[in-house]
Length: 305
Ligand SMILES: Cc1ncc(COP(=O)(O)O)c(C=O)c1O
Image 1 (cartoon, helix red, strand yellow):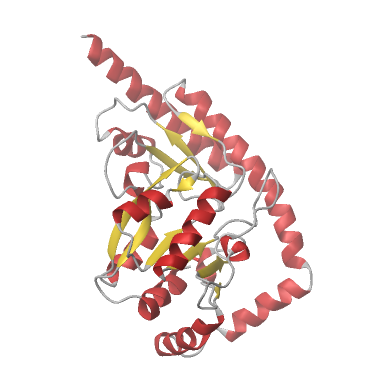
Image 2: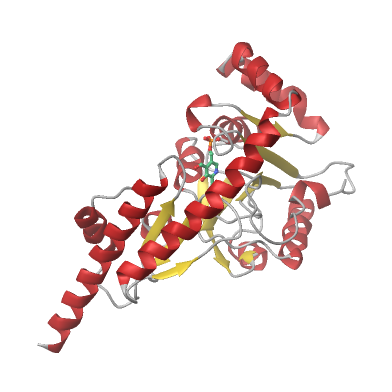
C-alpha cells in the first residue's frame, strides 16, 4: 500500500491539493499524503463507512479520496452500497480519484464475499474508471516482504510505471518470482485457508480475554474480517486514559485517538491479533483488560470522593 499511495500522490496530486481522508483513519496513509504536501480533509466515518455527502459539503473539489471500504481502518465497518455509489458518483462528477485500500479482504470470517469498489465502478462520460485498487501481501504473508499491487484505470498505467521507475527502478524479481510460485502451486490458497481459521480463533481469544479482564470498562467490537479489533473505553475518562492504560499494560498498538484527525469521542485500542502465539496474545489482552479495569475503578473512586 505504502508505495502505491506514494505513487498516487506523485502522479495524481499537486502539493496543496485536497484529499478526503477517513476520520478516524489509517495513520500511515495520512502520513504519506501529508509528506507530499496534500491538504487532508477529514471526512467522518459512521456505521455505513465514509460519508460522501459530508465530504462533498467539506471539499467538493478534492482531487482524491483514500478509503478502506471492505473493512474500515480502524472501526471495522463495511461501506454500504448506497455510500459506495455516492462516493463513485462524486468522483465521476468531480473528476477525482478514489484510492481503495483493500488490505485484509483475504481474511473474511463471516458473511458473503464483498465486491470491491473497483468492481462496481464503470467508465464515466470520459470513458475512464475513477478507482485505484490497492492490494498488499503484508497481511496474507508478512509486512517485511514489501510486495503489494495496484489495479489502475488503463490511462494511468504508463504514468504510474514511469513514476515507479524513477523511485525504484528494479522491482524485487527474486521475491516476486517466489511469490508467483507460491500462488501457482496452490500453497498460497492453502495458507490463506489455514490462517483464516487460526486468525478467527485468535480474534475470539483476544476479544474474550480483554472483555473478561476489563469487567465492563471496555466495549469490544468483534469484526467479521481482518486482523484487528477495536476495544473502546467509556467516553468520560480523562484524555490520557488510553495511553496510561497502554503503558501500564506494556502493550503496543494504535490508540483510537491516534487514528483521528479531529480529536474527540471515546478513546480506546486497536488490537492486532496476528504475528504472535495464541498464548502471548491472550496474556497481552488480559493485561490490557486488567489495566483498563484498574483505571476505570480508580477513576470511579476518585469521582465519588
Ligand atoms: C489500513 C491498512 N492499509 C494497508 C496496510 C498494509 O500496508 P503495506 O502494504 O504498506 O504494508 C495495513 C497494515 O497494517 C493497514 O492497516
